[in-house]
Image 1 (cartoon, rainbow, N blue to C red):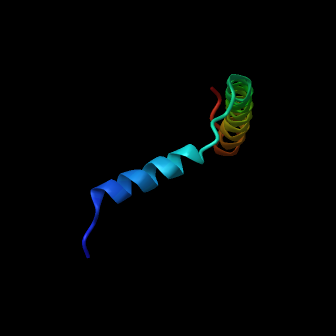
Image 2: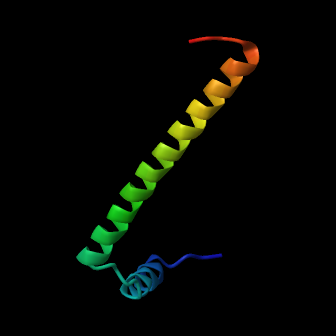
Length: 64
C-alpha cells in the first residue's frame, strides 16, 4: 500500500480544523475543579488511613 504524504498532511490539517479548543474560562474552571477534587480525595484518604491505623492498633493492642 502506497502512502501519499501530501494527502496525509491535507487530511491531518482538515482534522485539526475540526478540533474545538476550550476557552480560557473553561480551562480555569476545569483546573479548579481538579484541585478541589484532589483536596477532597486527600482529606478522605487521610481520615480513612487514621481510622484504619487506630482500628488495627486497637485490635493488636498497640498504644502509640
